[in-house]
Image: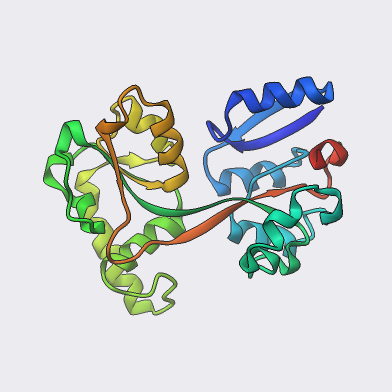
Length: 249
């Protein structure tokens, strides 16, 4: 059986049903709501066969010898990824992609409900301060994403290490606090059920949400003109996985 650890609502349930039927195993699912939450479960000794770290966390887990190496020759579609995209053939977070296979590549932007605050925004990170959304704005439960958003809004490098810049960024984020309903990476459900009218969001979640919405025209997604982080989620097999063969399937 496959012990599977991922974000919620990440994969169509039909994929799991098909996998179970084809290979005669069960998929035992657990979910996390942040990378820190994922790492805490791993550090507590929980054992999984497949996990989905972001690039930075894949780098950390690889450096800590927490991931198994992956034999690309056993993946029949590996060439379609590694021969076609130079970036993934030797990414910064995992030399030679020896421990990871890319699952998605995505941008971070802003999702909103057009039926609540209108169809057009300014196309800027400043839209999170929109008065019409006040009290129903979320930002991601992800330190890097929130600090990066603040840096980009100010025209700073997304990875600035300048202490003075950090002061400006945190001051900017404090000014957003009165507009916030909370910190959450569940942008998909927050927008669908109306808990949020605007949220910092990953493009992959927004694409999945639009596929489930009864009326996709109600929702919008924009990439801010000041710039957007680009990231990737990866398949990875923990070094202590009990069923690495099933994970390779």
